[in-house]
Length: 229
Image 1 (cartoon, rainbow, N blue to C red):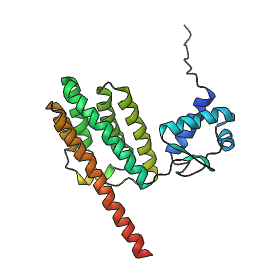
Image 2: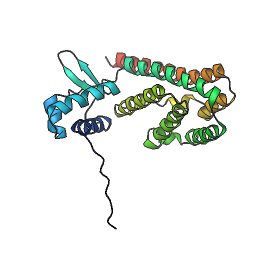
Image 3: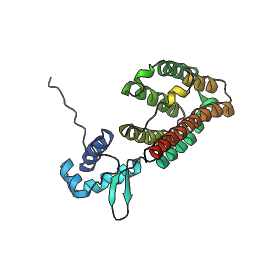
Image 4: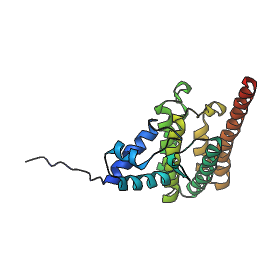
């Protein structure tokens, strides 16, 4: 019996989107770099109309921005943008843990405990590696999936794309050093207690520490620039 090969159809817009997205996340297209329609068409091997659609999708994903008199460009990762995304993450994930506190199953708790312990035990020497960040994203994405709220799931996925872009700019700092070793397990334990207010409090503290550390890092960077100037 002959084997059947299954081909997944991709439109020209899909091809352009996937190729441009990959080059952005790989750092080949740097933050702030202009993405002209003609250049992107040549880069991806499709016509301009599919490129326009792809750029609109990437803008919706938060990886591309449209600037007057400039056109489309890769999103600039500024401190204001980073802070904005952290605020969005806080809103999404606090709502996620509130939902889970009232609806999570025993099997889901066990799975999250396992993932949290695995993440918390990841060596700090590898926290800039794909291993650490893949585990980090899978943990938070799984919590969002357990909420059964598509808007929260999609929002967190977009934030992860931004985080990958942020990592390419080397603007991700070692905020994990500021947290106790069992930090993610503490989040799961708070969910397990069934108190939405306490679960939200624990997660909010986690994110607020990230903001504090980032502010301290930025202040040190500004002080260094002032001394060099």
